[in-house]
Amino acid sequence: MKFLNQTLLVLCSALTLLACQQGKPSELPPIHINPNMDLQPKYKPFRESFFFEDHSAMRMPVAGTVAIGSLKEDPRYFTGRETDGKLLKKSPIPVTLELMKRGQERFNIYCSPCHSRVGDGNGMVVQRGMLRPPSFHDPRLVAIEDGHFFDVMSNGIRNMPSYRHQIPVADRWAIVAYVRALQRSQHASLNDVPEAVREPLKSSSRASVQP
Image: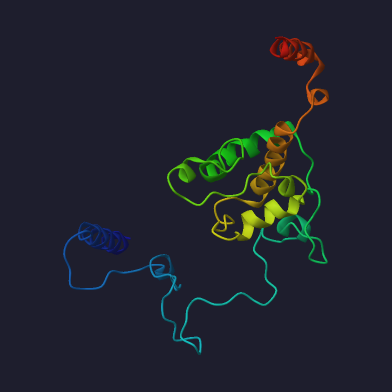
């Protein structure tokens, strides 16, 4: 029994001395109880690999792989064209007040510098020397398909670059809806005005034509 106690005392003393050595300089490599926690076999982007034949650690996705959230199930929505390649006549999403407000916000940020906030093509950069784009109120653009505006934002046209990277698909359709609202505002009749404000407009119009 006495021998066992002495043995335990020696072991405890040795462990205590070893614990006191932690953190002190040593030329010996550290002891790793579980080396996988410190040395994790992995590849970082653009690192060389000796496992693959082409020595590239970054691998191409398997053919047909689609990232989560990137499956374009509705080509009409993502391209603005029918399956036969023709431009969509009407937007594929319903027009709501929320959509119009979003379209107005995005239009004022990305489109108004050239097209102006009313869409007449006389934006601030045009006033400073840039080529003037066509007015959205031109009869040709009033009658053109909704898909045309989406396609132009996606792919650009003439001296207008593509905005596909700046403007997400949903926002492009919101801008299309707002462009149609701008066109309607410049070609509206009295019947397009809410009844609550129709009578004051009639009175104002009659007053303006009096001699």
